[in-house]
Length: 91
Image (cartoon, rainbow, N blue to C red):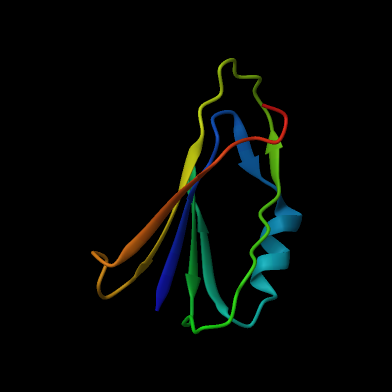
């Protein structure tokens, strides 16, 4: 099992539509939404490229918005991971 851990940008939440679209993908086993992190549990990954779109809604205006992180790692071997950052389109 693979976990995609998406830290949310300050002042943003995940839309319910986004969550529904992810849950309908066969590769997605489960989604957990915490206060500022979304955990997407995947069945497995292979050599095929995968694209996941997460729609966020800004609920609080934040100045000097900093990038947030995305981690992907093996549930059973969390030391094997990849890390990336993303920023808001409007920043």
